[in-house]
Amino acid sequence: MKAWSVLALLAFLVFVSSASAADRVFLPVSTATQEVEYDNGEPILLARTEKAFVAASYISRDKKSCLLKIELMNIGESSFTVGEHDITAASSQESLDVVTYAERLKAQKREAMWENIALGVAAAADGYTAGSAGYSKTDGTFRASGTGLSLKGVYSEATYDSTAAYQAQTLAQIRSEQRVVRQAANEKFARQELKDRAFRTNTLSPGELVVGDVQLALPKKNREIPAEFVVAIVIAGEPVRLLFREQL
Image (tube, rainbow, N blue to C red):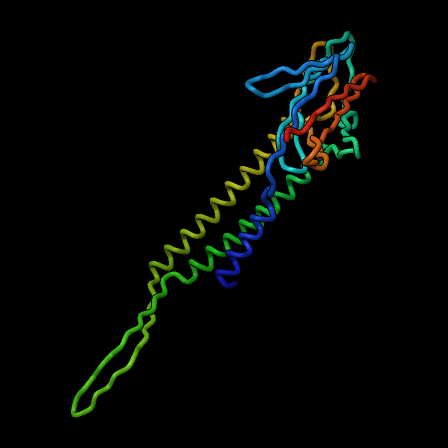
């Protein structure tokens, strides 16, 4: 494979796998029974029912989706269960997808697949370069004369340095192995981080607190009227509605 084509493919894969949009910011809007408080400058929407206390905050992700951090505490006298299916989202125009933990994990594995492909392309590029190492070419001109004759011409000489070639190939192999180890560690960390932070089904005993985030789709941007979305959480049979409005 030509070096330029390897690099072009690598650049394309990086472009495809990267986020391509600027963040959007939505601020919480409280109702008569809710409050907005600030923690280190970040607004948090507070709500409560007879059995639960809820705190929700917006986390930017990209132009099409966001994360919503949810803190949920059982303030009642009996246990209740809240699952992913109890959380829905909608705008004034349409319902919005709430991504489940399983779907987020699947997307994470897909991103890792593309990153591993990019690693393979990078290794191929290094291998191509290392394979050419050790070779050198010298071009020049010559002039010779004698017994009334004069000759003039050009020459080309190719040489091969086996030591330089071995060093380049060894370095390429080390770099490739380091990338693989680093990528594997990053994948493991990302899986564990998602497992630790994602909001999943939990049964809360009285006084128990659970914290997690959910990923949801954002409504279409409106340049004249701020877009809004409502997240509804059904807690022990009672819905809590949380309103967020885009900051233009």
